Amino acid sequence: MTNARMHFLAATALLFVAAPVLAQSTAPDATLTLSGGSLAAGAGYTWGNGVLQYDDKSYTFTVNGLSVADIGASHIEGVGDVYNLRNSADFAGNYVAAGAGATVAGGGSVAALENEHGVIIHFRSTTQGLRLNAAANGIYIAFRD
Image (cartoon, helix red, strand yellow):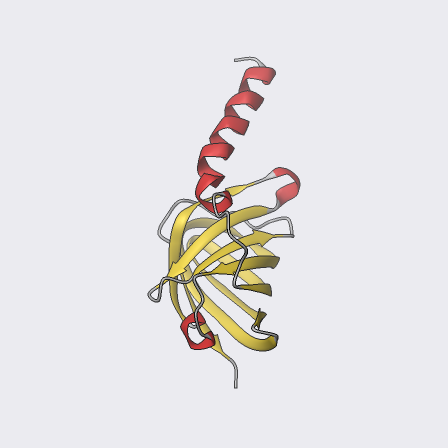
């Protein structure tokens, strides 16, 4: 297979994988920043701290979670758009993959996560090393006191 054909197939696959993440057409209800880490060897653990900007207020939160079928260690830095957030309390909870994730050029990635309240996060990694996958990843977000 030629390099051009491989690049075309990879770009096409990325469009299909990232489509659920990129399909949101309305303005987000909130935004977030996140930093943390991930360590994995078959099954892994992800942790971090972040800030949610919602309704002209800042809310600090923690992230803890288990990921399946991941390998490696990385430092995570990223930003996200939050949709379907009607009140700040609905942001906390258990999130699972709402769409497949993909590594994009430069080592960043995109992911869509949804919690039990219907809140959706479109997360964009801004650091290299983070590899998201289509496995059922789950994370728990809690507000810090």
